[in-house]
Image (cartoon, rainbow, N blue to C red; front, side, top):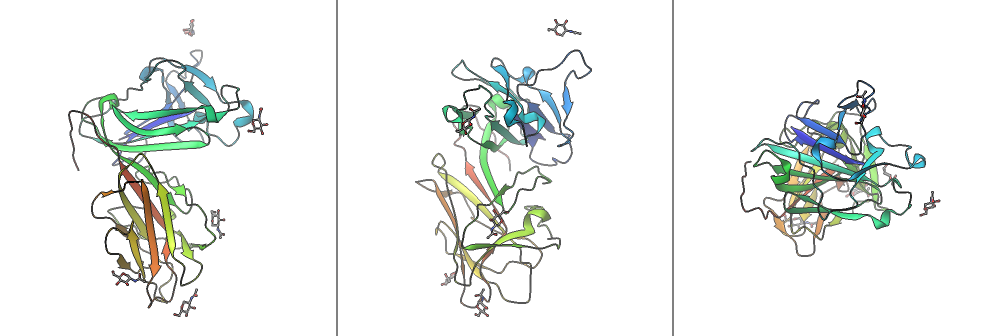
Length: 328
Ligand SMILES: *[C@@H]1O[C@H](CO)[C@@H](O)[C@H](O)[C@H]1NC(C)=O
Ligand SMILES: *[C@@H]1O[C@H](CO)[C@@H](O)[C@H](O)[C@H]1NC(C)=O
Ligand SMILES: *[C@@H]1O[C@H](CO)[C@@H](O)[C@H](O)[C@H]1NC(C)=O
Ligand SMILES: *[C@@H]1O[C@H](CO)[C@@H](O)[C@H](O)[C@H]1NC(C)=O
Ligand SMILES: *[C@@H]1O[C@H](CO)[C@@H](O)[C@H](O)[C@H]1NC(C)=O
């Protein structure tokens, strides 16, 4: 099952498994005014996304509805165009239905779109909490997407237990993931080249990274290039990284060391040909300054530079709830 909220906020709640199709998803178009003069009594199916959105009125108390400015509509889905803003109240809450013991992915999309006519997104900043736990801080200066995974211990997300906060990166954005994971575009770097293949990449059943995601990669510009991917998340102190590799050629040796924050001895790998291999830390790592680094260094025997197709970073949301319920 899955839960999605759009702020020109959109909330999508999806159970983390079997999230294919619409069953198990709740997609909420925040700020949507339902027109009771038509048959559209619950919501609408977005023709571009193929997703059925319901209005947020039944899931939230308070707030007021707005629309993004007409000149900001271009390039957005319909669900991005309406906004619920909360000018009053210390905390404003969406209560979302969940089934205890079920694993969920919740995604919040926050788009400013000059909905207030002030043309100043920098004035908008607020915290997201899952239950009583701090999740992330929204700075609506772009089209921002926030995701968390959690196992519900009660019937409503308002009291759910969050587990992991995820950020995921691929060389390009691909929305057709069997588990509804979002894949963001990797930043570019002058020391990286783009590589791609038209061949299908075999999925690893454990991580199920879509072939589309694995068909593009970055490669160091030369044998000696060290690929270093760095992120900082100052609010998180425990993290888990999954780096996904697949080679597009098998005629020459490509071998490199993968290390994550230089915590463990580095792992020496040769990416499998047209098939996905994954390197990850074996347990949650701690970091004081919130820095996470993946470092790829070619070994002396390698004929080719290191490469990276995609990676996922999960950070642990501290769980301050007095009660916990965890499953794997
Ligand atoms: C639509 O809703 C408005 C406000 O709640 C109400 O006054 C009106 O009678 C409703 N129209 C219909 C056709 O139900
Ligand atoms: C909004 O601000 C930007 C600069 O931040 C400016 O380029 C743009 O013209 C402004 N738009 C309006 C409608 O005032
Ligand atoms: C690689 O692809 C990305 C995404 O399309 C692009 O932004 C970047 O400029 C490309 N880098 C090179 C070196 O072509
Ligand atoms: C790669 O890692 C191994 C240990 O796993 C180490 O012995 C070797 O020196 C490393 N090579 C490079 C180029 O960092
Ligand atoms: C990498 O080194 C090998 C020899 O060790 C050489 O054949 C190859 O051309 C080099 N590739 C690049 C991209 O420098």
